[in-house]
Image (cartoon, rainbow, N blue to C red; front, side, top):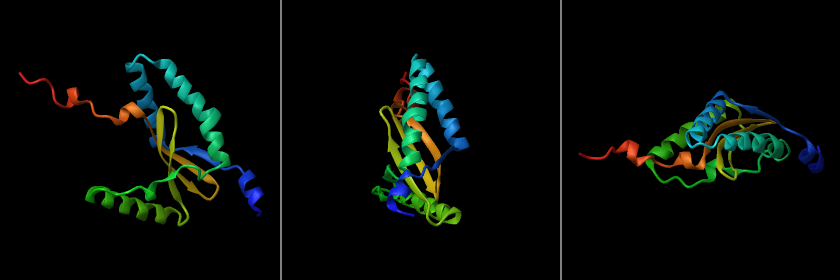
Length: 137
């Protein structure tokens, strides 16, 4: 297959159950923030931009395993993830895709199929200190 036909070939994009749960969490987060229209915009961005881009350029995101590891816990988790990935497909690759207000945390490419694994609104990535540490008496 020539390089030109490889680029032109479309990949199949599938949503995992975890990704669908994450979408439900994003929707609840946006409803609580009184921004239901933002969820509709997210769905539009996924269907009109992100998925078509991944279909055409499946490895366009940042390689997840190239990120620096800064803790023993992260090192152990990454090692376990690599073992699981190799068990499924030796040529699988995990990538990240940054959107305007969202981080497509992980997606994985196997041959001609891309599985969307996780998504979060960028504000969901922060800590809610008031909930974690209620006001002291």
